[in-house]
Image (cartoon, rainbow, N blue to C red; front, side, top):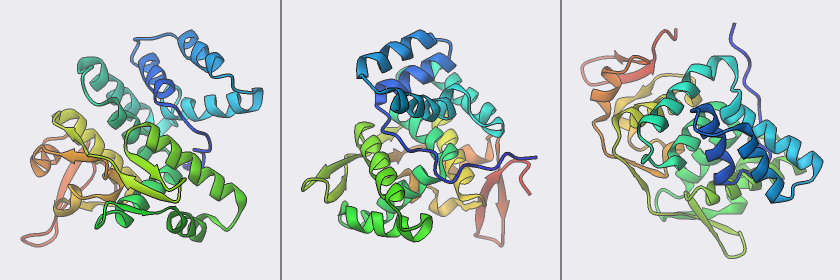
Length: 240
């Protein structure tokens, strides 16, 4: 039986060095004490530290059961290719793990598609429509945007009133590309059209240069489905 995904969960700012150290721990390249030292240096209070550790635990250290293999494969990619953009590793894991993070990413991707930026107020309004009009939704949306900015995906301007895309991160590694596809499919919860994979709003920070249909068709974890002569979709292998 699948464990139910948390509705929000990503409720803290996560600095890139914290996430990368957590990834290194999962990959066997760092020790838990290394992460604790970083959190010590950050001067977090007891409650903030506990909540931050919880986010990192779900992100890399101890993911939900159904995401354990996905996290292990991500760590293996990082271990074998230490030059891959580490922000893409954290983004893929966050998209697969935290629907709240993914929804913010999707909204920024959609709202900034034409002009390259969007109003923070519009992101907050749409998040409130989905998660409720409460202070927690506003605060946690800000935490996600702040984290995405620290990971090099967006910049905040006009005292945080606008969010703009930064130059896309080029992804040239086949394994990482397929792994990111999988995150998008997991978030969507349904097959995605091959024709739209390269422009998935939730993956807006990345320039996916590799042949997407080829990678999907050769993946051990994805499967191609056809509906008619020209409609091809990619789904999780084994999903009904």
